[in-house]
Structure formats: C-alpha cells, structure tokens
Image (cartoon, rainbow, N blue to C red):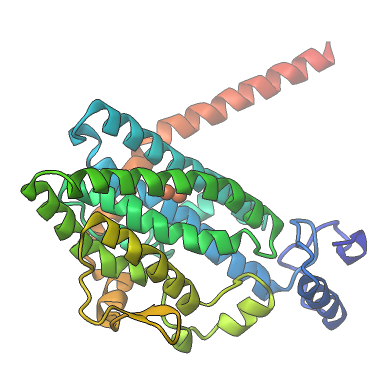
Length: 332
Ligand SMILES: [Fe+2]
Ligand SMILES: [Fe+2]
C-alpha cells in the first residue's frame, strides 16, 4: 500500500482506531488484489484475525514435530530415519517463518509461546492423535501433509504479504513431505500381509481426522464471509476438503487400500466424490482439549521450553556482550 495510508508514527500500531476513509481505501486495495505489508494501515479486526491464524499455524508446525519425533529412534532403516529427521527439521523451520510473519503484525514470539503454553492458543487438532505404529508416520506424510498442502496452496494468495510469501516456501517443502509419506506407505502396502494390514489400520485411523483438518463446515464458520472479502481466506473449508478427497481417493486406490467410509462414492453428476458425514462431536471434543494426546503434547512443549531457558538466556547475554563491544569500539 502507499505511504499515504501510514499513520503518523509510520506504522499501524494497535492504538490506531478504525477510520472509515482508511477502511474504504484498504478494502478497495485488497479487492484489487493488492498485498498488505507490515507498515500499512489495516483494520484492527484484520490484524487480530491474522495474528490468530498465523500464530495457530506456527504452533501447529511446532507441535506437529512431536507425533513424528516419537518414531525417529525406531525408523525401520537408516534412509527412513534420515528422511524423517529432515522432514521434522523442515517443520521447525516452518514454525520459525510463521512466528516471524506473525511478529510483523506487532506481537512478540514470547507472547505467542506463552499463549500456547497456557493453553489459550490453539494448534491443529490432528497432532493430538497418537502415532501407534511406523505406518502412522507414513500416513501423516501422505494425508496430514497432503491436507496441509491443499490448505497452504490457497494461502499463497492470502492478502497479507509476509504470510503469503512464507507459504510459497513452505509449500515446496510440504510437497516433499507428502511424497515421502506416500512412498513409505507404498512400501508397506506392497509388503508382507502384516505390513499391508498395518498400512490399512493407519489409514483407518488417520482418514477422518485428516478431513477434520479443514475445519468446521462453512455453514458453521461465522467469520468466513469477512475473511473471504479480505482475502485472508481464498476458498471455503468445504471446497478445500472436497479437493483433498478428490485428490486422495485415487491415491488410496493405487495403493490397494480401502478408505474407511462406506458412503464414499464417485458422483458423476457433480464430478466429485461424495463422502460420509464427519463426526463433529469428535472434532469439538479434541478442539476443546480432550483428545487422546492433548495434555501430553502441551506438557512436552512446556518442558522443552523450560529446558531451553538457559539457551535463550545465553543468547541474550551473548547479544548484549557483542553490542557492548561494538559500542566500545565505536567510542575509541
Ligand atoms: Fe509444515
Ligand atoms: Fe510438513
């Protein structure tokens, strides 16, 4: 946006009240596909929504390392272990880009992490399900990263510049995640009868939670219309979910695995797969903190944060020492 939309402090801090003229200019700019940048004026509601969405996304990448981390020491071969380590490391990187993108909106990383650790901020519920077998690592790559890509490809066109740009890079890495998962799943599906059974069992457990990743049906999303108008969201939850189903069913067919949904059927007229009703009671139960692993995941993150306190303190002390040294050099 042009400098004319900046406030007197050269930024758009939370203290700036919404003003109808600026709001109209903002809406017009966004409607014309202009990107919003950190120093631009923006409505408070836009800022709040994006801080919530980007920080939740960052927390999801961050917590998402845990279910897979559970299998690093037990990966079946050295190659699988190396691939898994690289993937988990990518997820840490995604969290960092996203915390960085959220910080450009005036919230600090410490505040975001406090909100997570205090249980005030949400992260994707999919990570509150346990990884019981090695096949679950394969299923996560195939289905969870697969669903994430569908969501994130749409977010590359989000109106907020730093978020959209972070997504471009993240999507490239997610596509490697999805492929490694599908490849690991194929090895199991084409393996011994026990391996195939293991693959089918994990598909049975991960299919429905993957569909839930797209969030409640549009009929039940109160903020959808405004978020669509502001291009925070480019496509509806139901449309994205449908795209994921259409993309994934042929992949399961190719593996010779069966989707755990008796209502799943190609609909010639619609040109899409019809599928069964999601168990929304289960969805809300996990969102509200009562999934199998909610408590364990949060505790693991809190412990990691506490144990890392000395690293943060050392980094601050080192930065202070360097700053003092360059100050002293400048004074010489
Ligand atoms: Fe990721
Ligand atoms: Fe990923």
